[in-house]
Length: 114
Image 1 (cartoon, rainbow, N blue to C red):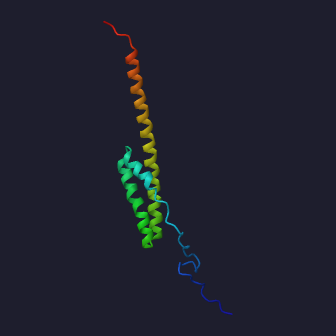
Image 2 (image 1 turned 90 degrees about the vertical axis):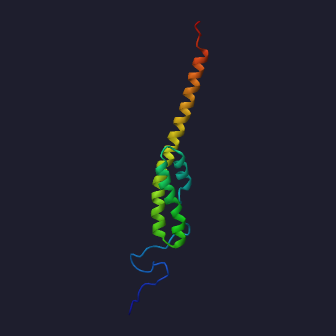
């Protein structure tokens, strides 16, 4: 009895140790996170993340599934850093505005000496 080679379905899943077929959708590109990072205090990190986020879909459509996954991982890391910086910057801005309003309120109620 002869066992032939394993079946091949076009995606390379027929052999032992072969890569599985790609997912039906491209990975998430975290574009919004990186755009918010550009608006925060870490603009270079946001720009780097934006570049990798834009590469995800183009690599996926060209068939470079591994490259799209790697770009998505880098975009995710940069996006998380950018999003945290945006939130910290936004909280800092709100606290600064509240501080200014408090100082103006204190100055307005202070007794005047003449």
